Amino acid sequence: MEIKEKLLEIVNSNYRVPLVFYQLEDLIITMLEDYAKQQGKKFLVTNQDPSKRYDGMFEEGIDDLNEKIAVDIKIFRRPSILLHRLYDTVGRYSMQGPDFDTLLLVVANDVPPSMLSRIEEEKKNIKFDLKIWDINKLEDIFKQNEDLFNNLYSNLDTNLLKNTVNQALKTSSDDELRKREEYLKKLKIEYDNDNLVLFLGAGASYDAKIATWNTLITDLLIELIDKELAKNDIQMENHYKEIIATEISKQNGASPLLQTRFIRTGMPENFGELVRKILYKNSLNSSDLLNQIGQLCIPNRGKIGVQAIVNYNFDDLIEKSLDRLDIRYRSIYDEGMIPNSSELGIYHVHGFLPQEPNDYDDQENTLLVFSEEGYHKLILESYNWANITQINFLMTHTCVFIGLSLTDPNLRRLLEIVAQKNINNDDQPKHYAVLKRPTFKNYENIESIRSFEKVNQSLQEAYYQELGLNIIWVDNFKDIPDILKSIKD
Image 1 (spheres, rainbow, N blue to C red):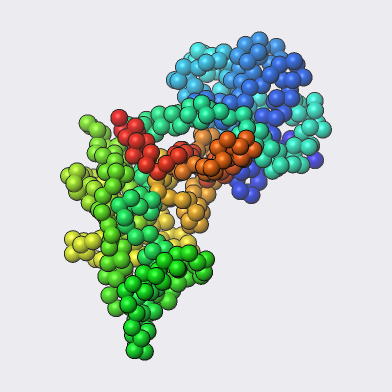
Image 2 (cartoon, rainbow, N blue to C red):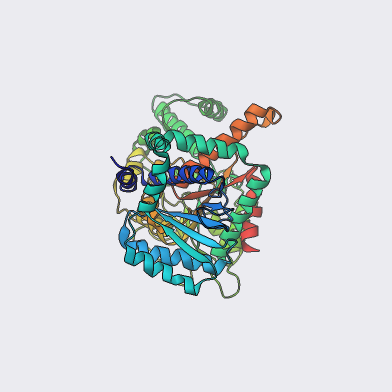
C-alpha cells in the first residue's frame, strides 16, 4: 500500500474518530519535524498551547522560504466542507493578528487544483502569505524518510502515547497557568457572546449538604429492610440504623444502581416523599458555589450570558439560588416543557424532587434515572427528551461541566456522539470541565511521583480531548467559585 493510500485509510477510518484524527495529526507532526531536521532546521510544536491556533511553526522557514511559517494541520472526513472550512480558517487568522509571515495549511486530503487556486486568491485580502500542502505534497515529503513513516503508521497508538508523555514531562507550572488563563479567557468570550450552558453534577450541591447518591441509596435500603423486619416483629433502633449506614459506606458490595431495583419495587407507596426526606435532611440550601453559579446567571447589561442549565441532580438548590437573586427561570423535568424567552431553563435530565412539590406542576414520575431500569432506558432511547436536550446544547453551545466526575457512561456516550459530528469543524475542543487535579499530596518532593502526576494528568487531558472537552484543573473544589467569578468579571 502506497503512502497516500495509508494516509487516506486513516482519514476514512470509522474507529473512534477523534482518536484517529489525533493519531494522524501526531504522525504528520513527527514527519514534519524530521523534514525540518533534514534541512538543518527545527519544527516547533505548538498544538498543546491553547494560545496558539496553529499546530507548529518553522521558525527559520522551510525549503526556499526563509521566514516564520505557522503550520495548521487540517483533516476532513467530508471533502464537501473542505473549501468552506479553509476559507473560515484563513479568515480567523486574518482577524486575530498573526505572529508569523506565512500560513501553511497542511491538508490531509486531496485538494483539487481549482480549489487550491481559489483559496490562494485570498492572499490579496490578507496581511500574510498563504501556502497549502495537500496529501500529494505530504506523500512527496514522507517518501524522503519512508522507513520512519512506516514505523509511525504501524505504531499509531504507541507513538501517540510516547509523544503525549514526552510533552507532559516538558510542561512547567507556568505552562499550565497560561493554559488555564487562556481557557478562562475563551470562556469569558463565550459568556459575553451569550453562548454558555452550564452542566451541573452532584459536586455542585455537595457543600450545601445535599445527600450524596450513596447516602441516599444506603438510607433507602435501610428503610426498606427495616420495613420488612417490622413485619416479622423485629424492631431496629435509630442508632443501630446509623451504625449500619456507616458500615455499608465502607463496603464494596453490589452496585447502588442494582440495589435501587429492590428499593423501588419494595416501597411503591410514598416513594418520592421518602427520597425527598432523605435528600434534604441535612441541607443548608446554599453554598459559595451555588451562590456564584447564581451570580453568573445574572445577565450583564444587554446580554443573556448563561443560556441554560443542565442539572443532573434531583434537588432544587439552584432554583433557590436564582429565587434569592430574583432571576426568572423555569424548571424542565418532562417532555414538552419549554421555557419562554424571558426564562432561564433548568433541565433536570435525571429527574426532579423539589423541596416544595406543590410549587411545581405534574410532579408524578419525575425520577427518570433512579433505578437500573431507568438508567438503561435513558441509554437505549436515543430520542428520549433528556438525551436530545443534552445533544442539542453540546452541538450548538459552549458547555461548562461543574461538579461532574464524567464517569457516567451515558454522558460519555453523548459527548462522543457530538465529538464525532464536530470533528470536521477543525477547531480545538469547545467544551470545558472543571476537575480536581489528581495528586499524591504527601509525596510532592519525590521526583518520580511528580513526573507520574504530570503524565497521568496529560493522559487524562488527551482522553477528554477526544470527547471534545478542555480540562480546567483545580487543586481544591473551593477554587471553583473564583473561576466562575472570573468568567463574569
